[in-house]
Length: 200
Image 1 (spheres, rainbow, N blue to C red):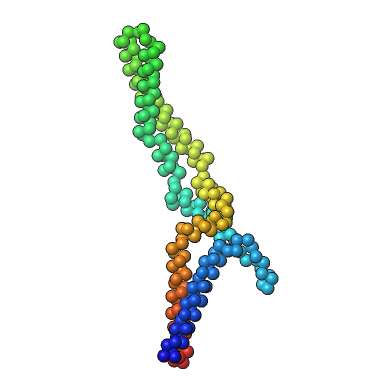
Image 2 (spheres, rainbow, N blue to C red):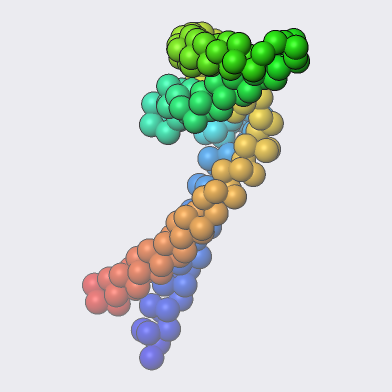
């Protein structure tokens, strides 16, 4: 009974040490946010994320641009074929109304002839113009918009406390698992130590 008690004590101590070690390790990912000088080793220590914030921002920007958000795909969906058809129909309707207003006294046959001609011209010319304009917008937007840079800037603008809060919110469950795993592993190591002490 005395041996079992020793094993349980060692296992409990191991579990506590394992848990605390993992909690501290997780904290050290973010803290200290400001560098702290340690005179004994004559070095400054700072959390992993505060130290590598700029590098992390670059990597996240790259991943988002290359894997998740393609600027070409976004721009292709800005002006769809349906949008183009709607613009053409809108312009045709407006011009027909203008013809009716401006040529109120003209015979219907002449008005209908002009409307038909204008309608065909708009169908061909405006549709092509919209296609050309869409392509030009895509080319210019590709030159002007850099998703990677935008993401990078947003992350760099974030306060380190805000960044810590965001990461903890996203990975809260996984980080909790790491803490519990430290407890379990520490407990098991404690049992092994107890068995070694008893049987050696």
